[in-house]
Image (cartoon, rainbow, N blue to C red; front, side, top):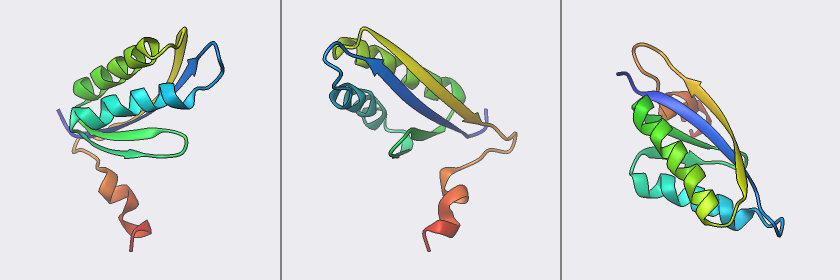
Length: 96
């Protein structure tokens, strides 16, 4: 399976309306996974095997529920190319 990029955003519904601590728990799941990733203001982008990355998204949703969310809406984007695609190739020109 080629390297793909998966971008995702969790939108947890929490009783007190303070979503940041719950989103932080989702980001912790990504950080602990060891996959290459970039946290942005609106989404987190990961790089790797598609099945692994989708499993991380599922675990991030579960982490939101464990952190007090009553439900979670998740937006997912997948960039697939048969020969693979990396975060670095997309962002290199902006990092010079």
